[in-house]
Every structure is written in structure tokens, then in C-alpha cells.
Amino acid sequence: MNIDTSDIIEEQAAHSSPGKRRFSLLPSFLVIAIALVMGRGAYLQIFQGGSFKDKAEHNRLEHILIPAPRGIVYDVKGKQLVENISSTDLVINPAELPPLDSESAIIDLLTQLLPNIPPEEIQAVFTKAHTSQQTTLLSKAIDHDTVLRIEESERDLPGVLLASSLVRKYPYGESVAHILGYTSPVTSEELLQDSTLAVTDTTGKQGIEKTY
Image 1: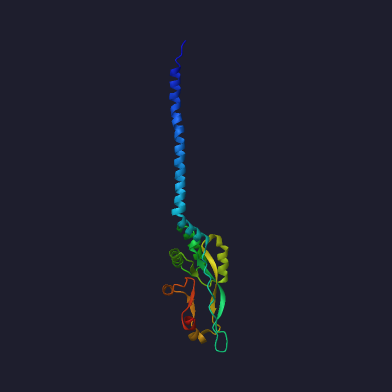
Image 2: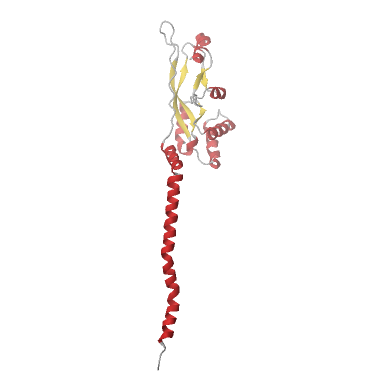
């Protein structure tokens, strides 16, 4: 029996041709894929490199305000007329706050821990912290018992921090109040007038305290 080998060869060639074509296209796909990866890398490194560097620097550095203590006032005989007393403030750090939809639980807990501060006032401080993206004072010179309760609930109060500060004490009371004046937390008007002030600062309102 005679077999026509030409038919077998043609049939084998027909079956192997698509595979060879796919194999021949593989280097092209690899070249395109490598070009895309290199192009994306060049775009991120060259065109977006500066932006990513700024973000990295921002994440690496944290600005912490350390307020200087107010100066002591003396009379002409060197007698001390005011004192700086250690105190503890409660502040809101927006960088550590949870998503907005989780803040209601924190505000509810703070309302229980700080019964003298209305819930709407606490909410206003949170809003101010988000708007300014700066540490914002919630309550100044809180008592020792409140400090302990807040420390016990620390895990449930992300973004709510205890901060050490100094408050003024006037040993001679009202007898020299008309001369010394007094201090209180900085107002919104003062913040607009003086860019060097921070929302956690204390400023003098009358007398020598205001002058200095």
C-alpha cells in the first residue's frame, strides 16, 4: 500500500502553525509588558517623585508645639506677685481621630466624662479640629479625678489627649488684680490678629499680663 507522505506533512504543518505563531508573538508581548512597567516606573520617579517625597516627609515629621511658660512678675522689692502652677488640659488631635462615622461614640463618652461641657460644644471642638487640622483645646485645667477617668478610657478615646500646661496663680488675689490683670485661653479674634499664636495658647487680657 502506497502512502502519500505529502498529505501527512501538510496536515502536521497545519496543526503546528498556530502554535508557532503564538510562540513568535510571545517576545513581542514581553517587550510591550516591560516597556509598560518601565514607563510607569519612570512616570512615578520623574514626574511624581517630588510629590511622593513631600508626602513622605510629611508622614515622617510631626510638629509638636511646646508652649513657653509665662514670665514671673515681681514688684520693685523683688517680691513675686504671680506663680505658674502645673495643670492638665484635654486636647483633640485631628491626625489621630477615627473616621467621622465613628466619632459619635467618642463624643458620647466625653459627655459622660465631662458633664460640665455640653455635647454641642464638644462637637464644635471636633469640627474645629477637623477644619484647622491642628491640635485643639477641649478643656483646660481639668481636675485630678477627671484625668484618672480619661486615662482609664484611653483606648476608647483615640485622638483625645491629655496635655501638660501651666496656669497662673495670683497669691494676692483681688488686691493687685487691677494692676496684674489676668490670663485666659486665646480668642478667635487674637488668632486672626497674630499668626504666631496657636489655638492652645493662653494670653493676657488686662493689666501687666496683657502688656507682656
